[in-house]
Amino acid sequence: MLAALCFASVLALALASYLTLCLRSAQLSTRNLNFQHGIELAEIGLEETLWAMNKNNWSSWSISVKTAKKTLSGFTYDNGATGTAAMTVTNYDGTTGIPTVTVTGTTTLANGTSTNRVVTSTLGYAPLFVNALAGVSDRVKLTSANTSCIIDSYDSSLGLYSAQTPTYAAVVMSGSTSTSSATVQFNNAQIKGYVTTLSTGPSYSTSGTLRGPSTPLTTKIDASRITTSPYQPLFSENAPTGAATVLPTGSFTIKPGGAYPGGLYTSTGVNIWTDTITIQDHVVLVISGDLTINWFAKIWVKAGGSLEIHVAGNLSLDGNGIQNDTYLPQNLIIIATSNNPYTGFDMTTNTPFYGVIYTPNGSLTIGNSQTIYGSLVAQSITFSTTAPIVHYDVNLRKVAFSGISTPYTILNWSQVSP
Image (cartoon, rainbow, N blue to C red):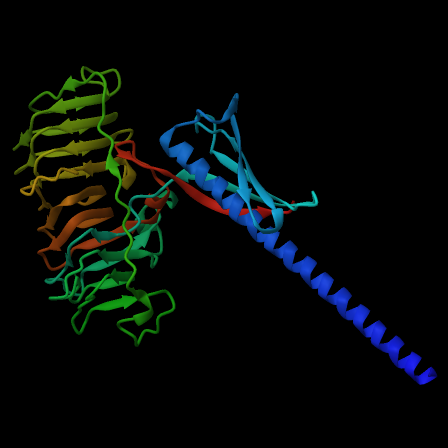
């Protein structure tokens, strides 16, 4: 009997230990599940905040000075658990600082106990020019490129390209779904960065290179720099409104305190042959027709100036093109989002181009071996010359342009201990 009692005691102790282990495991599992619910609730709160920011709709929020608050409830889970997401947005209108979001996801059990997960995020404008060259729905072709054709990157916020060591962040992308031929054709170009295509890309010749910072010198085409997940955001054009001045003809200067100060200008078409339009102020130009620069004519953006051009028709940058003496690509943007099937852009000038072009529904052809500092986004991009050079400005990934309806996005995301 003594042996039986001892054996029963051991069994009871083992069973109690096992039951305790099962209970603790169940509690831990429930806790982890609630933590996961808390993260999901916090993410829902971030999505709700982004919707309010991008729609500028704060009707269901509580506003106090520059802080907006809202709580989402009504979330139910198994075993009687419920959830809420409490959002707080500081500088919600973006006028006094960067909008910051704090979301607390709370899961409450049927017995009244609760767990919290807190997420903080900084919001900012989504970047548009994330690629060096982007063929939105068609090919990017450098079929005549020789080894003097270079595509690399730098950061204009750090100074001039010539004062920096080129980096490997230039992305050449094509969103074409064609399978008849390669959608990125770079021949003998020297690419420091990535090539990304949906279907059949890329193609290159014997002297073409695609490298990263750690690619062995003996490797010409680094396969790790080729991806099949091209990404190019498409945003709507933000057409300027308000009082405007008709753009004068001939040669003239737009500058602060001058006869023509900065501001909004309109034109039915700009076609210059020998004239110079000088920009020394912040100018937005809306052209309902074509923009054509011929022969010895040019548009000259000097220090202190910036130029935003909206073109409804065709663009032909020949002659001396557009000279940007600020050397900042963000100070010159050309926008053409028309669905006109006859819309086509071409740039055939030797003047270095510091700027960005956004024509997602139009083709773009580069006819001279010029140097481009910035980014090009078009339906298709063709370089019909041997030695063009593209220096992608990575600082464009931090820049929002007033002429583009740019949505807010999450710049960073982190969990905070509850």
